[in-house]
Length: 150
Image 1 (cartoon, rainbow, N blue to C red):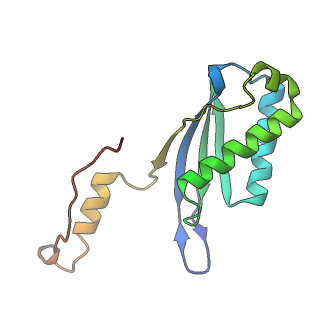
Image 2 (cartoon, rainbow, N blue to C red; image 1 turned 180 degrees about the vertical axis):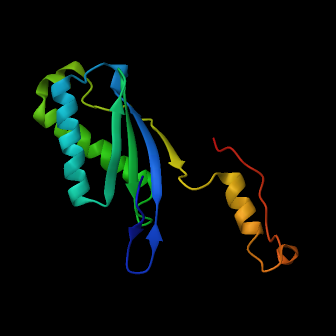
Image 3 (cartoon, helix red, strand yellow; image 1 turned 120 degrees about the horizontal axis):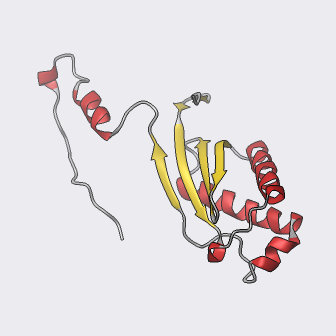
């Protein structure tokens, strides 16, 4: 189980599932490259407030379970992880760069999702509604319908 990150004025538990496809959906993750990827992730942990709780892969994409702090947006985490891993794997394994002839390790897209350890959307709404001393005292200020962005 993940632990909360304690800072001077906040406590957080932010978990993300990040999936990064390899460029051209190529299968370039040999055991040696996988080992280097893990070492690069350990170096990222040392330099940034990004913790890799799990790293896994299938043939042509890598899955990360990441914990970070509120200061880092999901986009910043993705950019940091993808850019450093790509740069270092190309440096350590020139043969991978030859297999990915376009000079990029990752496809431009990615998938990221928050991971809730303690509750889902329904549980959080129920918790918020139950915050008054008397449930009848709860006053809903706003409820927005779920929107999907393009």
